Length: 317
Ligand SMILES: Cc1cc2nc3c(=O)[nH]c(=O)nc-3n(C[C@H](O)[C@H](O)[C@H](O)COP(=O)(O)OP(=O)(O)OC[C@H]3O[C@@H](n4cnc5c(N)ncnc54)[C@H](O)[C@@H]3O)c2cc1C
Image (cartoon, rainbow, N blue to C red; front, side, top):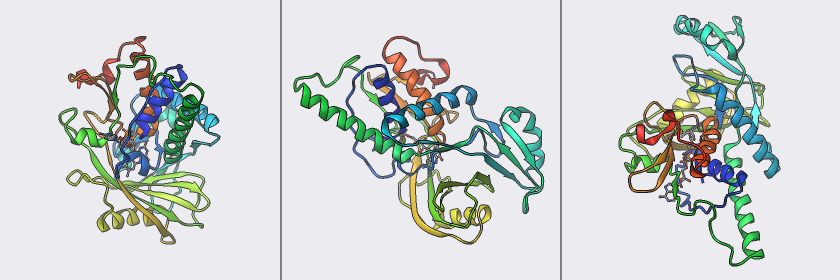
């Protein structure tokens, strides 16, 4: 299961509702390769992430709760250093006021850059550990349930609801009509000499410390070849980003690729499809931030407690 399916599973579980799941574990699943980066202010336009003040605390509380149950730390808060070059400084400077609540400092003395905007609210989610831990947790729960009560029902609550959390695979198959899915490549690097106390973002890429001298660097955006195959061109581009942000002294230990599920304004969507099933998709490049809160809203709607808000409603896509 990816981030969408796993978060929905937990939100159902927290409400005391049962579920089953199917996943064919196909290669290229975005959640398996994601760095789990949460960046409060993103992109060339230096824009505060959509509804950040609402979704970030929900995500933090969610990962702490699940981490407690799995016996793992899943959320690693870290300052984000947004490195800004001379050419883009005028644009970023014009957006500083809007981003003010998330800015800790503007450092002017950063070799090779015009400035670094230091941001709070960022960090890393251990996405792979979260997805694998979730799967094991519920498989074990199911085994226990079946052992204790062999004829327990397979599903409870709204047993008729099937929720498709298919990521890019579903979008590419045309589940929601048009899409803007983007392939990305990512490297895992060993670089014991690099600073590991911050996330670096700049030059169109990022560098995220995982601990023990290991980093993730990424990423590329490709729209015309949507597969999970790492390429030499992708690797060269991410190595270039790594050299720019970290330096020349690193060893590549892994190279992966996946496809980001992107629709509409790069915002997630939930709700019923005409064919009767329900969808949760469109987590884009920010699944770590949005999946917990959006899954919570979907669980509330499945339980017939709340309506789907217009900003998330797939019927308004
Ligand atoms: C290179 C790269 C880097 C990224 N970095 C970050 C990052 O730093 N921070 C961040 O927040 N986000 C990042 N993302 C985005 C993030 O990965 C996605 O937002 C998120 O993982 C999407 O989760 P999902 O569950 O919707 O899709 P997926 O993770 O793709 O999961 C979909 C699952 O559905 C299964 N499936 C599909 N169809 C079927 C079917 N018919 N039957 C059974 N099973 C099926 C698949 O096997 C898969 O397990 C990155 C993405 C990429 C590609």
